[in-house]
Image 1 (cartoon, helix red, strand yellow):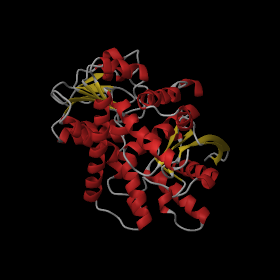
Image 2 (cartoon, rainbow, N blue to C red):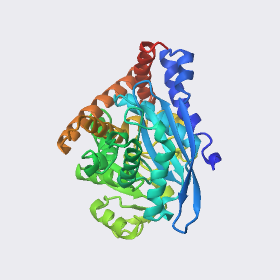
Image 3 (spheres, rainbow, N blue to C red):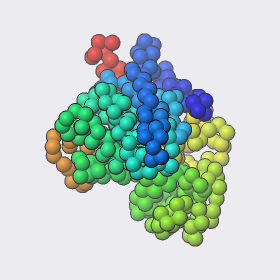
Image 4 (cartoon, helix red, strand yellow):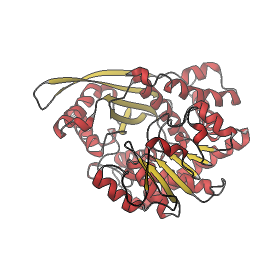
Length: 413
């Protein structure tokens, strides 16, 4: 299974190296920053409903803890592999640095298909993951969160299992929990809302044309972003999911589309638009293309099809380095994942702070704090890109590397 994404981690490192060349970072520091601090692999025995025990392979990569405890989600997916988890943990390190929260980067995953599980099997797997990793987790050590196919309920089980092992409640060990168990208001829509804040910041500096948007992915992030942008005057002309896509040049009625998706399980067949193949979404005539699915969505093979003037990366690693270069040469602005999808981890940080202080914020407070952080990060990244005459991804890494270099020096490296 690991050979499916053999280049994803190498692609991630290329992004960092491009920035390092511009600002004279010592080679020994780059070597240090490109290597994960810890790689943990576990085998999780789960008794299935048929009475048999099945072993699931899981990972946790704690990439870098120089700026604080490691932080990153856990995904349950049949295509999880160590190469992917390393890359995701690497990106989390830089995402947390760009958005200026005191975390390092981590990521976890289990090779499984949760859609085939009963509720009981899913709970036993979730608790088993924590049992296997409890020595490596903690509110001041490593803090997981939801990711692909993991939910607030799964986070609740994981927090509960960790608390049982410790003998007292440790709400801050997990974020993305239900509100009733110390979750933060606004966390469920944070990734999408953060992306919306970023594109609104970009509006003053980048020509967004008629603000026509095509979104690849109609999960929580993609669907929520479609709703937010639609309510703010953007026209959603196309959206896709894992089964297909739907398009309407005059704009889709997002409320009705999401009702259709909830009822049928797919966006295809919506009466307010025409069906398209899911692969066609990349080439839709639009001003803003939003990859909000999985990594490697825009590659050198399909980059020529991109008609958008702006790419807003809500997925992790959706654009390969080769495609990134070609888009920049064509004048397409790519707002990178480590900036544009950082809203989720930002509100996870807010949740962790609330858990540690025992004081819950209102949703309005969360939004205001979030808006300020996202605006500041956009300004820093955009300024670096202009200063060095590079794309925004390299600008983001330049900004993050300069901050990390100062941390390395202060800690004696």
